[in-house]
Image 1 (cartoon, rainbow, N blue to C red):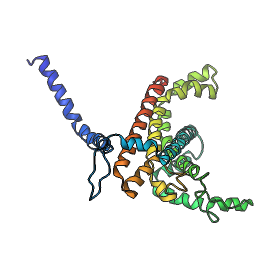
Image 2 (image 1 turned 135 degrees about the vertical axis):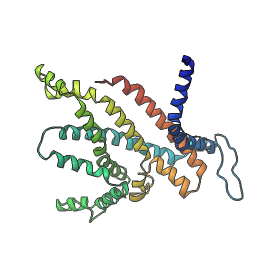
Image 3 (image 1 turned 120 degrees about the vertical axis):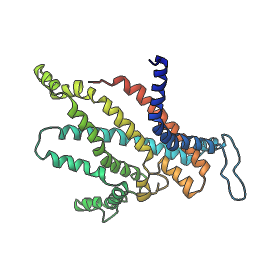
Image 4 (image 1 turned 30 degrees about the horizontal axis):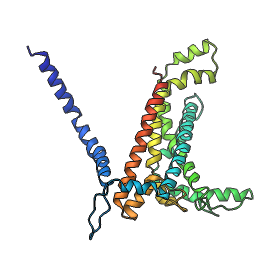
Length: 296
């Protein structure tokens, strides 16, 4: 008979062998790029005649004085604070609607989910037509009611909010699927008990349904926040960060520095800041939202 420590040893070995492929892939495509960005952020950008030199934290000091960075960061925070709660709220409302036993539920569900399956490039081109001055859909509607033409994407006051509106329309259907799946997992006995106790629809939702949806809400919130900092393809199609960086976001600014200005090391510095911001937000979400989670 084999000793217990021998069995425990091989259990650990087998466990590590099972997770080794996943650990390797995560390290290769996540941890290594993060470490590489942190490393390159400490060097100047090299040229064929002048190799890169170690400059320590000079890139970070320059970042603190970079007015465009602060403007882009402010844009991204506004973008996140608008898209995350509104898309989650719309997703929850749509899920509650199609979870009811109503006529045409399949058609409504399909119409809500259709924007999700469209590529962002296609969505950006569709909405680019909607926002086009004079002959775009919105201006045509306003002209019908006697309104004036408006350059939606060319106005610094409206460009960012036009993008926000489009992204909410695009992402709400995706988050709706998670809420719908969670709603269908709730026991019908809870609803029956609520009816017996005389709980109204709003009271039952506030006290029973929504608390039980908190694990799903946490998952969706983390994904929504990450999405709000990583979407860049719609900017390339619609505004390219303009006018005057009014609609530029942090990831697009990183893209510009890396592939338009060829300043890869400063782009690495911005990437390190982006990773740090996402890490802080995720930690806050887990420490605050996790306390309000109720499991069935």
